[in-house]
Every structure is written in C-alpha cells, then in structure tokens.
Amino acid sequence: MPKVAETVPEMAAPIPGWRAVDPENLIILTLETGTVAIELYPEAAPAHATQIRQAVREGFYDGEYFYRVVEGHVAQAGREFDMAIAAWPTLPFEAEREISAEGFAPQGNADLYAPQVGHRQGFAVGRDGNREWLLNCPGALGMARDNNPESGSTEIFIPLQPRRYLDRNYTIFGRVIGGMEFIHRLPRVDPSTEDEMNAIFGEDPKLAHQISQYRRSKLAENQILSARMAADIPVDERPAYDVMETASADWEALKTSKRDYAGIPALVSVPPKVLDVCSLPVPARRVGE
Image (cartoon, rainbow, N blue to C red; front, side):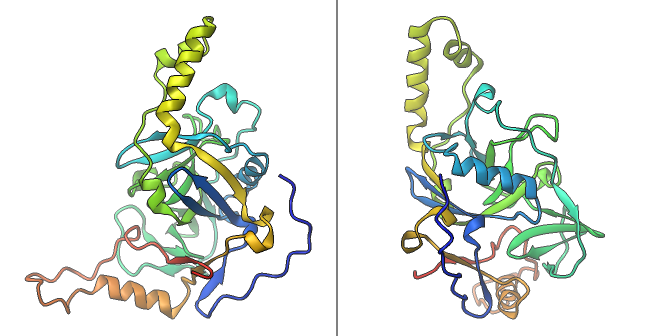
C-alpha cells in the first residue's frame, strides 16, 4: 500500500509519563474478533521490523489466518504453507543484542530465567551483563521458524501465556499494546494435517478444492481481515497510542502497588513482595479513549 504523502503533522505530545507510539512502528490488525494494535521494536530486531513493515504494506496478511492457535501456548499467523512464503528472504537471528544498562528499568526482584529482568521503552527484557533480549510474555510478537535459527521470514506468533523457555531462542520484535483480548478469543485450531496438505497439493483438483474449502471454513473465525501500518492510514482516521514510560516514577509506583498485598485484611498469609515480569504488562492506551 502506498504511503500517505509527507504532509503528516508531528505526533501530539503525550501527557507526562507517557510516550507516543511512532505510527511507523504501529501495526493495526483487523480480525473477525476485533482490532489489535501491535508496536514494533526495531531497535531490538531491525531486520525483522523492516520485513514485517514491507509485508504489511504489500498486503501479505490480508485475508490470511491465525492458522495455529494452541491453548496455553501461542497464536500463529501468516501463510500456512512453505510454498506461499518462499519468495520472502529468511531473516538473521536477532533474539538478543549487546546494549548498556542505560534506559533499562529493573523489575526489582529475582527471576527464574534471567540474571536480571525489567523493561526498556515498555518492552519486557532480560539481561546478562551487556546482553539483552525481549521476553516471551503474553502479547509479545515473535517470528516462527524451522530448526535453523535463521529460517524465519513472515510467520508471526503471539504467546497466549508466558513461554519463557523460548527466550533467546526465537526473535521477539514487538508486542500487542491494544486488543489482546481479541487474540485470546480466537478459536483454537491445529495446523493442517499431512493428509490435508497432500490433498490440497495433490493431483486431484476436485479433492484439493474440497479440502481447501474445508480448511477455510475451519479457520473462518481466525481470519485477518486486514493489516495496516498506522503511518499509511489517513491522519484523521489513524489510531494513535501512548505507552507508559518505564523509566518513570509512575511505572515504579504501579509495580510497587502490584507487589505489596499487606493491606488486604482478608489475607491470612501475606504473599512475598514479588512481581513476575510477565504478570504486569506496561500500560498502553488509545489516544482519545
């Protein structure tokens, strides 16, 4: 899709303690279940962000499906079959990078998977020395791939529950900042079976059509009606989002409020002041709502 001419006004400044999401990093997915907003994080995985922008602008995901939705695991979307994505180049493995601790907001308690966890620009991250990576918390945007770490290209996944064992093993390059409830509402579905794929790409046209139609009917409620970069949507129609600054007193106060339950009279045994990094997503909000 062609970009809107460069007459776009500058983004309005968000209120103190919040930052505006760059429309060049904002994907708007329209699903059967509702609208989902995804913020890309190109600083962590530049090649992935660039290719996904290109795919969205070429309409790659329009009319496609979340074709693998596994309860308690992930929702995976794109084009289900290898031959449908063969034209897209595979991407370098960008699961972690080297970066100083400046701008990193520590979570404030120990973690089971990383020496240190916290947030950077609203994204949950882990650290080990100067190595940093994005975490597989619910709502993260990751790149599915084969066994080769550099075999991903277009097939995206979103964890439905924390999948921390995937940290540093798959490239995470964004997160859902609006409409995660619509991802959770997707009907659960398995990928095509080997028999179905053999029929779809077999030599019997009638059977191929029948199985293809059956597969489409099975996935109908998981269809991606459209995917757009916010920057390409006319300004007066464009959704805008703010994200709470994680290098802020507001974020620290919110974390403190969620880890201290000492003031609840009904609790017989007061839990320790621990807050799992995946249990509190950094708040985001649509401007004007």
